[in-house]
Image (tube, rainbow, N blue to C red; front, side, top):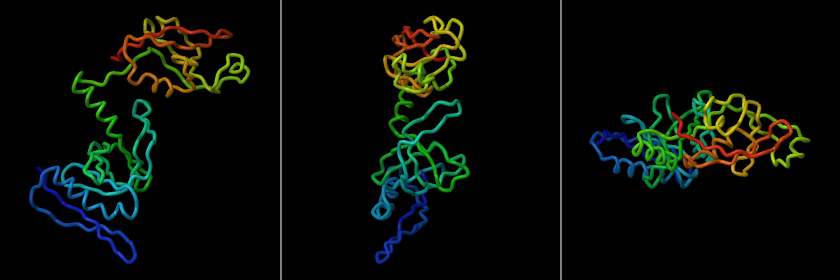
Length: 244
């Protein structure tokens, strides 16, 4: 049960202008009832300006807005690429991350995650499919499992002549700048300075390509890694392990 401040939308029919209107509500309401109230409140907005959403934060803080973009990308604190991010103009203040982003049918479509401090009215939410996968991992295993290759790499351009000689479809590759001793890559025979150009016969041009390939990859299943070392182009079999 939560104490709610319910917002509704006032629409000026002749002009089509939409303005916010707040109604103080002192009685306790259930979570579902609260979401339904917000859904009804922004229906008028969605008819005028597009797909509407509501952000629900801690306490009585609520904010309405619209989805302004989908398929955006963000970097986590560890450098991991997070894809398919939802961009909205919902007001999201520091400390409010973690609340649900809800559509006009009271369906949770994302988890509010981040803002750009210097940008006005831009916030981001992780899509609900990603959140459900993370929750499933936490419930079953207590943590999110990540594949570990035992390498540190960087994206670098490759000479056109080299790319043509080895029939590469990309102008960039991943150069290994460090290989963990006794790690999966070292066991497979990879060395510092090797260039990774493919995983399972799919072209690799950036470190992010490797991250994408590893998402959901079954542990202890071998990957075929395409490698260029000096003038040689060959494949090795690399078995990822769970990151500790």
